[in-house]
Image (cartoon, rainbow, N blue to C red; front, top):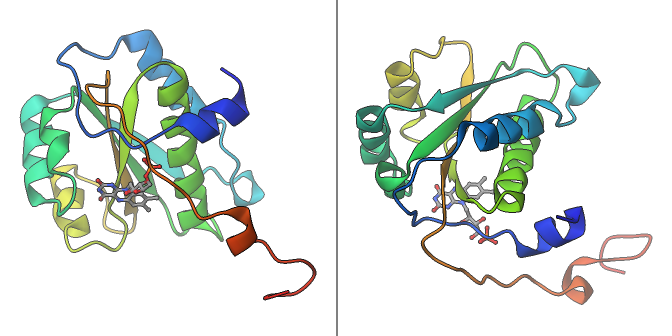
Length: 167
Ligand SMILES: Cc1cc2nc3c(=O)[nH]c(=O)nc-3n(C[C@H](O)[C@H](O)[C@H](O)COP(=O)(O)O)c2cc1C
């Protein structure tokens, strides 16, 4: 799939079919995360594949807007090390987006569950045995889509200026 088409057509998918995500697809998604840019190529990330259904359900339960993780056949937690990069949040975010785009390009549905700085970040870190000094940037829910979504965006005329803010 063309990258511009993938960017345009990707939507957050929160309902999934039951069948498992094939290992080759998971590998491609993780590869897409691995090849994300990062400040000074610091690659301050780890990706935890959430294979255990009970664990996914327990995590879903403590999140605020991620309850659908309970019914996703797979998840990926994105962990960043703030000591390893000058821009750990941006690095983890772009790795997350790369994986969302890869999932979409492969015909899967995925959704970003915001975790960094959330009220449940520490609880989920404990559940996943993430070291204290590291941060949970996001959780991605993943599976074959069982819904189609449309979501709009502001028009370019609303968000683009020329040469100075507001111009
Ligand atoms: C940083 C961030 C955190 C998000 N957290 C959640 C979340 O906790 N739960 C959820 O259902 N969607 C979450 N989303 C998905 C957004 O709601 C979604 O991207 C937005 O509404 C636009 O819809 P679209 O992705 O379908 O285009 C998050 C997205 C981002 C970028």
